[in-house]
Amino acid sequence: MVATLSKKPTSGFTLIELLVVIAIIAILIGLLLPAVQKVREAAAKLQCQNNLKQLALGVHNYISTHQAFPMSTSPWGEGPAPKAPNNGFGWIFRTLPFLEAEALYKQINPYESGSMFAGGGILDPGCRTAIASPMKMLYCPSDGSALPGSSVETKMFQFDPIKVTLTNYKGSMGDNRMGGASSIHQGRMPDCHNSNPCPGIFFRNSYQGVVRLSNIKDGTSSTLMIGEDTPIENYHSAAFYANGDYASTHAPLNYVPKPSTPGDWWNVISFRSKHSGGASFAFVDGSVKFLTNNIDYTNVYKPLSTKDAEEIIPNY
Image 1 (cartoon, rainbow, N blue to C red):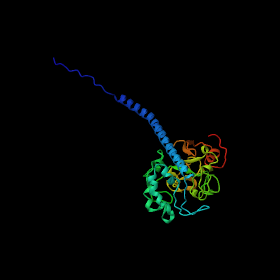
Image 2: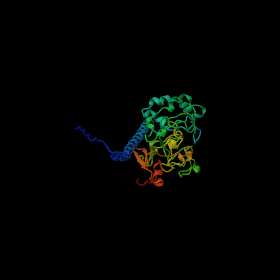
Image 3: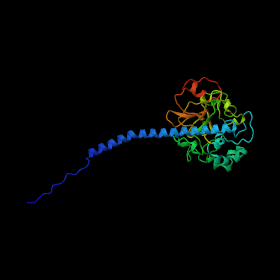
Image 4: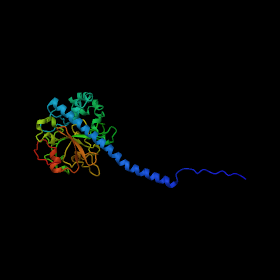
């Protein structure tokens, strides 16, 4: 009689069991990914607000030394009291020594004695490496369009095709109607962007009449100082340039035209971000707040950007 060997039953997954496991894993991933994205965005938003806080502190340290806000010098001989050299340097450049970037400031500073459109100033070939130097504090982590290597770092007005450092952070010039009647938005008239003064703090001709803390009649906790922008939507975003470091509240917060029109400065020199639902701002008192897209455009958003219009602003 021949003995027969019995086979042990094999353990393993059936096809149906395997498909069930895969489906469960897919569901878990689907549940986890939005949570991970929310955590990442929250961290990016916090870092962005910290950048604004550091910029605000830098401005206040500048004020402590110079008794005025850092000024910008237009590259054009414009405004009521133009004077040479029209070097084109802006308020961010002049704040560098107070942002732990004194070495970069010293590389650029010698070129202040030249006029931009005469081949000197910020366009002097000698400072091109310096004005393209990366500066992490100027980049919002939620927006890659300002980072080194961005597709738009060589597209900025008056610099194209020269590479420049970009910025996500712009000084508030108030509710000026950029370009006057050319703009689709409503704002304070006459257009002051090529003149002086403006209703806010930072604008390209502020060197003709510097702004001081004593000019903030509306209260330091109720006046915008610095806000967010995205260079891919606004080709006036060269970080150290007097014509690239300011924005107006004439457009609603987070205005982004479809299709994008980054060259239409009369419409897009305004505040926007890649954060969901709004953008962060530093106020003159140094506080940083997130303003939502549903902020009252007429009665709150625009009045917050003026320094001495004496508006009564509702709670927001």
